[in-house]
Length: 336
Ligand SMILES: Nc1nc2c(ncn2[C@@H]2O[C@H](COP(=O)(O)OP(=O)(O)OP(=O)(O)O)[C@@H](O)[C@H]2O)c(=O)[nH]1
Ligand SMILES: [Mg+2]
Image (cartoon, rainbow, N blue to C red; front, side, top):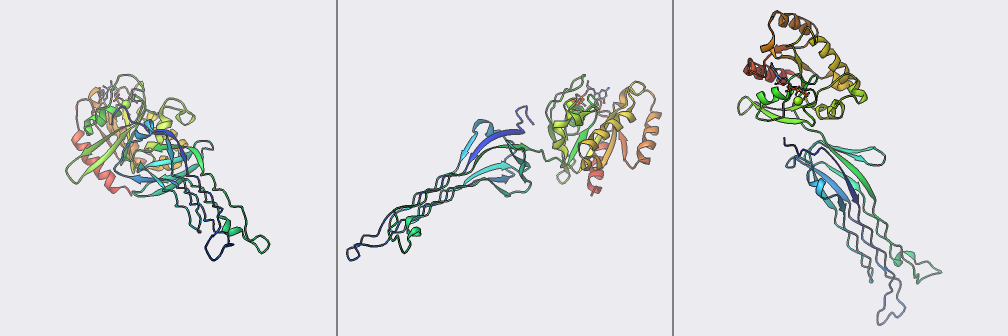
C-alpha cells in the first residue's frame, strides 16, 4: 500500500428534486371546456452507493466531494408525466462502511460485491392538477410542487479486507515481518510508532495459497481509551479471520513478552469482544538477539497451555521465515 492510502472521507450527497406537477387543461376542438390535464412531476434520482471489488481505495472521493442526482422533470399538459431523474450510481470499494456525518449513525456496511445502499433519496414528483378535480372544482388551478431530494454529509470508511492481522506492541517488528512475508515495503524504525497507517501485503506460498496480511500501528496499554495510535486502526483487523500476535523476545529481562502479550490482548478485548476472541497465533520475534533459547520452550508451554499455537522467527535475519509461512497457512486454513 502506498502512503496515499485514504481510509476515511466525508462527502455530500443529495437526491434529485422531484418535478412539479403541471397545471393544464384539455383544449380540444369539440370539448372547449375539457377537464384538468396537468401531468405529475417525475421523481428525483437517488444517490446509490454500489460496492465493487475493482476499486481499492477512497482516493477518488478526496477530489470530488459532492454527489447530486438528477432532478425529476416537471409534469406536462395532456396528462404527461415528467421523466424521473436518473439515479446517481457511485462505486465504492467492497469493505466500505457508511455513516451519517452528523449523527454518527451507521447507514450501511457494504461487504459484498454489487451490494447497494441508497444514501440520499430523490424527492417525489408533485401531482398535476388532474388529481385535484372535485365535483365543486372541476378546473383546479393548483398542482403540487415536487419535493426536495434528501441531502446530507456522509462518511465513508474503508476497512481493509485482510485475511491475517499482525498485532503487537510498538517496535515488536511487525512491519519488518510484513516485509519478510510479502512484497510490501513498509517503513521500519528503531522507535515506537513508526507505522502510522495500515500496510497491506500479499503472502504467496504458491499460486493457490495466498494470504493478505495487514500490519497496523502498535498497540499500547489504554489504546481502547485512545492512547497511542492503535485504536483507530483496529477496525482494519475486525474482519480478518485470524491474528498473528508478534512479541519481542530480544530483551525479555527488561520487557516481559508474556506481559506484552497480555497487554495487547486486553486492549483487543476492550475494543471489541469479537476481536479478542479471534484465533491468534503467537510468534516470538528477534530470536537472533536472544542468547538463551531455552526461553522459547518456556514461552511455548505458556501459550500452548492457553490454546495458542506458538512459533518463533527473526524477521531481521529471515530465520524460520519459510517455516512461519507454512505454519501460518496451516493455522489460517484450520481456523473456522
Ligand atoms: N534484532 C532484531 N531486530 C528486529 C527484528 N525485527 C525487527 N527488528 C527491529 O526492531 C525495530 C522495530 O521494527 P518495526 O518493524 O518498525 O516494528 P513495528 O512493530 O512495526 O513498530 P511500530 O510500527 O512502531 O509499531 C527496528 O529497528 C527493526 O530493525 C529481529 O528479528 N531482530
Ligand atoms: Mg510498524
